[in-house]
Length: 318
Length: 237
Image 1 (cartoon, each protein chain N blue to C red):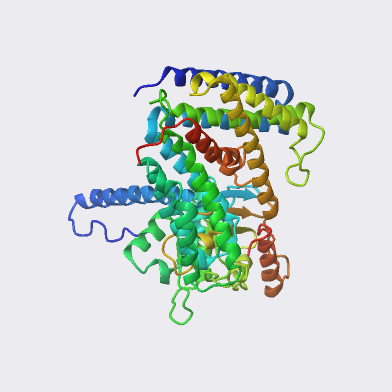
Image 2: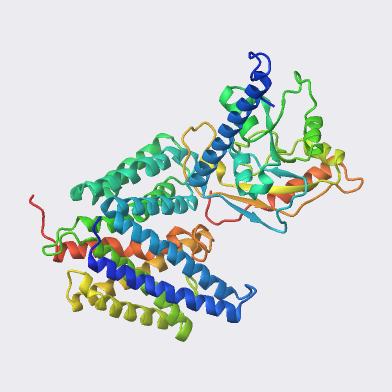
């Protein structure tokens, strides 16, 4: 077990931020909500507790190395897929498709990432599964809502398995001079995305006036969006030391990550509104479900992966 | 229950010790089974209990639920607070739960089920009397008034009269409607591999048999109270 000093510094930094957040949450609760009556403060403290759990899990996965990270995101994919498919029209005729999605597609995609077969894990879900799974559903002969059903399942697989698996796939990039430190790319992605979410929330609470998409997500405002994305860009630029990027490049990538994360949240909100639910699930107190926390990571991970792969990584011999 | 033959072949003073030892072993295995089943069910369904206009209570109660899967009572059992689980017994058909030694072990030892014979022609015990006896011994019951698993497209089948007779015989015991959502999609009838999907178990306000209320009115009222707990959702089939 070897922890890179950069990772150690980052973990200490995150730990310090969380300690500070917990102290603030505790003081706020003692001052303004001693009987647990203030909803926003209780929600804030729920969120901080959930952040602790997430930070500890991520730290353990990072220390556990490749296997730890792949297992953690494999489990996140599982939980997200469970939430997503619950809200779809899948019915008895799709039972075998769903069984295949959970017990074949999901483990195989992460296995492909584990063995670093780029040519396969980048097309397995969008090509093979896309074509093969509708056959399984068609064989049952139930045609009512067929196109809707297979489209929903494919969407669920793209979001919850394919896109999510590009987080651990960052470990596979071969960047000259950055060997053995790829886990820092994951840390960079997740820190920027999650801070962007938090900062959007904070800026929105402080200055938010004009709503961006009132029908989709009443809490998202222009001020929150601009403030969150810009401050996340600055934080990302400030984290250049743990990446293979220059400060300017780190800032630009952080900007792209934050923008994609924001719109990822918006798209997933549109799906929730369509299905008439407020949260994807109830597993994480204060945050809702796994997808509520993962949506922005899932949207930014594949594009971050491909940008870094295109501009920084060396192609393995053909 | 279930340990009548244990230690029968040993003789003399050792017999009592043997018997209590094997009872202990059986109980330990049953506990371990309960833990494994609980973890497995939570992994598949991430089940959550929701109390609407009701609270968990130590009082004896009759929980009546919709029935779509063999796992129904397991989900109710899991979301009850642990101190209530021990004294809450599912009522189940002996024709299914005594079919194999494993089922019988799960039904009787792990979940302490009250087994009733559903076959009107051949049965010797009156199911309502069996349930009342369990209530009188201090247990709460989980019953499925539809009488059988609902595999139709309808949300709820017409209730059998058993719920009415129970309410009539023990009028002071609260009847709690319990809606189990989604478990039928996790494990549709005829499939043997479950699909992980989120489930919820909603407990509604208690009801009781009103003075002079006839069977049809009461069963319709109970059925409406249960159906009112079904979550509403757009866009689902």
